[in-house]
Image (cartoon, rainbow, N blue to C red; front, side):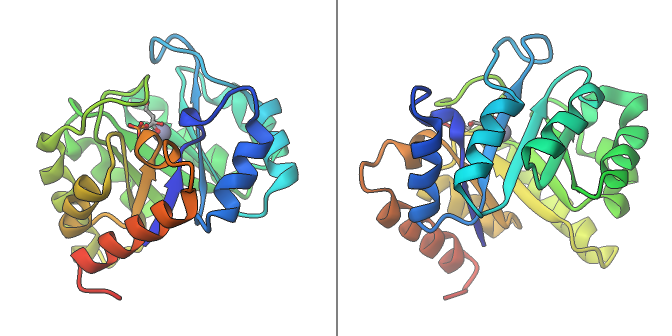
Length: 222
Ligand code: DX5
Ligand code: ZN
């Protein structure tokens, strides 16, 4: 199980030291939320911040692009040190091309889906992605409550993964706590993005360790 604290919940005055704190807490990945002010009603940070984070850490940088025109950002984020580039299925008929473009840059490909969007829309792309990001809040802001109605989508994605013998990760993002994380793990998730619930702890390492232990235990792992 992979624990990916979200930089969105960090102190924006101290990105580099917050990233170091996340790595020292033994987190697996750092989740970077990129918002363009149009796809979602908020703006976060750009490639310069991801570069600053990459310079002080060694763990994978999981870049979630909540953007209408992510293609303009692939090269800047790839250069900045992103390991995974995730785009949204809501972008419609350009999704396949975007997937090929990310793949062409030698980066891991993620596909995200918003709570109101039917899970059927991701099915045609499952064999060409490394990660399926199932949003468990409406994207745009940290600190929102987990939407339980998204859990059946995790179960459906896990069923398809098994049926089609694929190996993409199922990542959940939004309102993830120890409790909601366990619920998602039981449904089939294996990557847990958590902003507010983790980064509010002054002692981050025990919080990351506890979340990892709880999501593992939810599926009978040690
Ligand atoms: C929401 C972002 C999330 C966010 C999660 O638009 O995609 O990654 O950081 O934050 P919490 O864990 O606070 O819901
Ligand atoms: Zn995110």
